[in-house]
Figure 1 (spheres, rainbow, N blue to C red):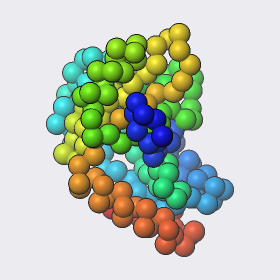
Figure 2 (figure 1 turned 45 degrees about the vertical axis):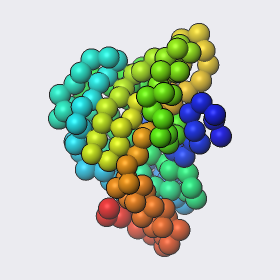
Figure 3 (figure 1 turned 180 degrees about the horizontal axis):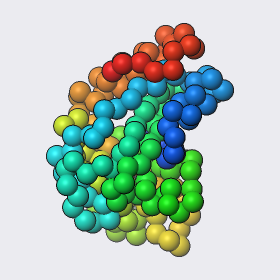
Figure 4 (figure 1 turned 135 degrees about the horizontal axis):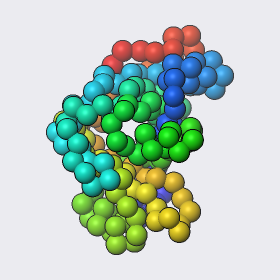
Amino acid sequence: MSRNFGNVFQIAYVVEGIEKHIDYWTQVMGVGPFFHFPVPLPFEWVRADGQDLAVDAPVYKAVAVAYSGDMMIELIEPGPAPSTYRDFIEGGHSGVHHLGTFTDRLDEQLAAAKQAGMKVVLEGELPFSRFAYLQPADALPGTIIEMIDARPAMLEALDKMKRAARDWDGKTRTAEM
């Protein structure tokens, strides 16, 4: 557990061609089923590198999640809008992008992270959560951390996905939310 950010519950991968990555995770890794999030996500507000984006900005081309035990595997294929995901792909990267944590003290933890030199590279609010992505200062090693203040509807949906993973037959790649 991180005393600063909470327990890591998610490993997020930024990829191109999300369907082939779902195939890899379900067929090779034995993790599934994956749940596709409908895009565009219904942002109430969203900001990338301190710049406000339109609430319908195409930040995501596709998002899919599955569980392996209590660990969420998130696959993100970036859309054309400015984002940390787009920067990652355009920088020649693919793979692990960030670790996700739950928090009920987002504002307090965000202020402490900024004071420690971390940069907010993406933040926003959805009907089911508020989130902030923190990137370590250039001189510091480490990965991006996503802090999520989840609302009850999100927690209920994630519990449903965990149950689906426990009961998964190993055959169906995806399931409906």
